[in-house]
Length: 262
Image (tube, rainbow, N blue to C red; front, side, top):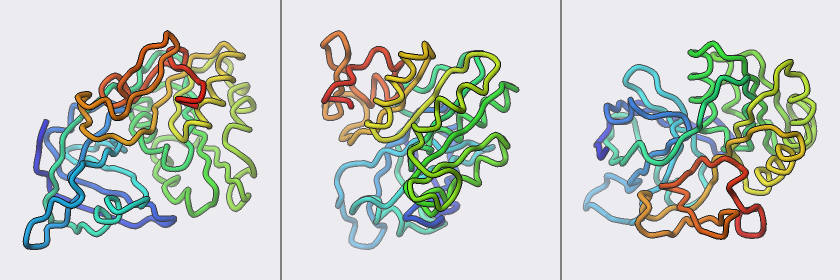
């Protein structure tokens, strides 16, 4: 699982979004929904351990021996990652975590912002399986959907939503889930990743509509392997789960959608 991989591409897409592409052997057995833990320190001399902790990124896609990742600059670590250049080497640990449980049902993939990251790989696998699926992506602005074109190679059933109406429909992505879900002739399974309030809203809809739903939780992770319990989430039975090791993907019904998770 540990690997020193070569950076092939680290491209700015717009809206502080970047696509990182690596040559990787260890990630070829990854499944949609799993993530990779990166050391993002600069390669400048002398060596530095700042920032000390790794940064988790969902596997965006796998093609041949290349693994790609979608990320957004949100702090010091991701800013350093954005400065890494093709040809450099990067230390990674993965694939980690529990991925989506793909069923034979038609699928509705729902992504909020950079929460689309694990869904491209899922779309790739669903296309390989020749399963019916639709992708619904939302963000605040068109610029924050700069990655949406990546989905075109796997499906034409792509719906975009922006809060400011700059591309696609105006509103929140959750506003349009009932409408899109109703277009399926056979009950779909929902797969989602995004901010916790978005996922909580989808959990309420899935319960009311009696639809299966897998959610990929976003959480700050320290160790990434379940040792530190820094990314714990509340389960409905009152126990705690580790997002990194027991997730990041969970069936929605096992989670407590109160204050802790929602």
